[in-house]
Image (cartoon, rainbow, N blue to C red; front, side, top):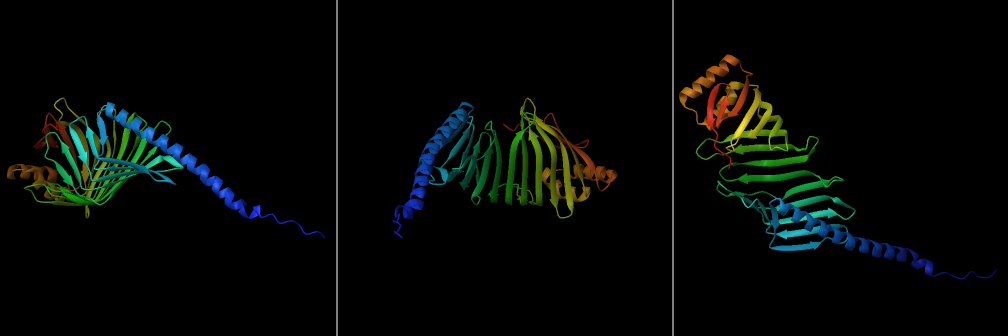
Length: 303
């Protein structure tokens, strides 16, 4: 029988296929990376038209072969030339095969500057945020901020935030914080084991509150309602609240309200009449905060 001729090219066929695929993927990555750059530039232009800008001292694109990465050194986010947010570094990452999903990593410290308030310098470990865009490029956002600390305000072991477009032309918001310590200047600190918020920010900038809840040990305090801003930019609205232990709640928050002895006695009497598991409306109206029928504090304009 004649010897069959060897086919050495078969040895190199798998390598050739890999090389062709690599070349095709490289071409796709560079084209898609250019599209991603153009898209981000378009979005930044659109944001700027709405008063929101992002500036960096240095911008770098990379991520080949499996990611699109945008690195921004010393990012500064400015809103309407009135509010400014600064951090050390920002890294945006999208998978090359799923560019509609974007992760953001933010290194602190982060400083918030706004009209009417002193600059807030927040320290935190690397914060992770993620955005998933739908077919209309409307984002659903999530954020995880560990070891957050704000001097003069307090700290939290972890803060988690989630938002998504709402059916009624608004934004659904879910917020949770664990092991919170509130440290207001000149008043005793308050420790909260778990704090959560669920609501919807509507198109008219009012807030529908489905549930707000605070827990410290066996003490629970929760409620729902709606809030907005009046013409003087003061909080207005009402929240129907309930607690498992009214007297323990008053002992916890009473010192924060700066109540006089007579006002504190009135609150204790009112809660005593309502029972331990009291249901009390919290009302903000005409720049005054009411707890049930009693005045608790003045509400200055937010800006």
